Image (cartoon, rainbow, N blue to C red; front, top):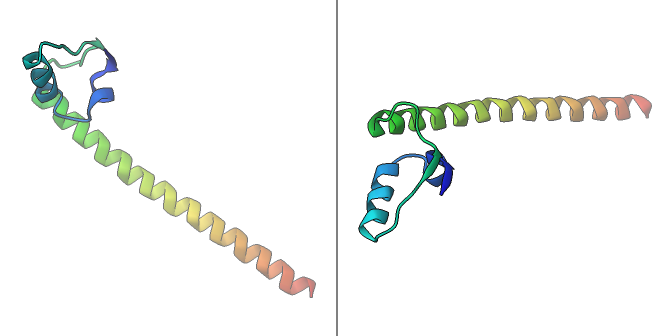
Amino acid sequence: MVDHRDRLTRFGYGYIATLFEQQGRRVDAVYPSDTGDDLVDDFVAVITRMAARISGRRNSKRWAERIKAYIEQVMQSEVEAC
């Protein structure tokens, strides 16, 4: 049992569910997908994952720039203090 389908796998949920069914098991999602179409759900999952990675990279760059600016500011303050 999973909350959402993407907690089990990002995409390809239908393949995993079919595999479990062949073994006499089943997968239950508490909150099933909105569309009901596996292909659309997989496509949305892939796009969402790509967008999250791009956003994460942007945030990482901004964070690194802030750290670099802070270090430069501290170094400049130390030079001026001497």
